[in-house]
Length: 114
Length: 117
Image 1 (cartoon, rainbow over the protein chains, first blue to last red):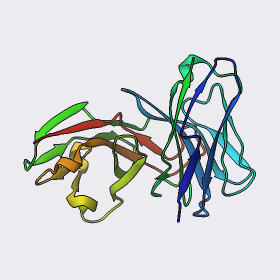
Image 2: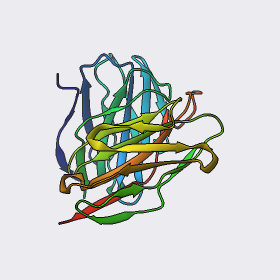
Image 3: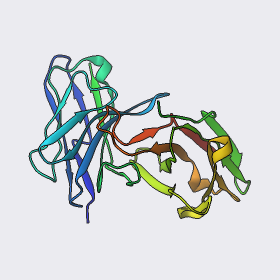
Image 4: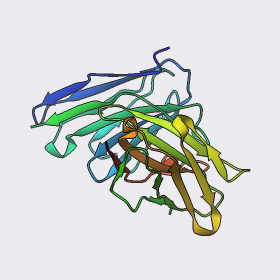
């Protein structure tokens, strides 16, 4: 069982370019999340999805978009990358969106925007 | 608003010594509380969680945590630290989702643990 996979593992990107970070889970979880992790700031929620076809904004959604076409996949798109989006991005999933559900995390994508 | 505070950014302990990592939360109702660990270059792994009942909860890798409602705290402890425990530790609080902007878990900023031989 793979759990959650993310791709790519790392990426260096020129500012202004479009980039999609991929996330796939095989646990049939309803809820999925994208976080960014920055030194001294911990994890901050970018977007989340309660179920296929629905998405919601987190704490830091500006400059990012998501889609949830099916249960397994939850891609994160940077339409026009900026250096402040340099970060480590984590995808996570849980059975449901309620606060008692454990979140399972992927290995992360390290993104550098130059 | 919900919030989680981890007062210690970085802690260093000697191998074999005891460990306590502090976590304070702010939440209007009974919280769901979690501790996650992140090893270097890895994702987050759940150590333990508290929902209700016994306020002392046991987790993986010999960790435990105690919920103290009066102090709004959920401190993580381990009686004897191993070198492999060196990692970053995150406390998180969850509540019922109201469709708001923060999803269902609020994380603290983390405490980095270093272990001296």
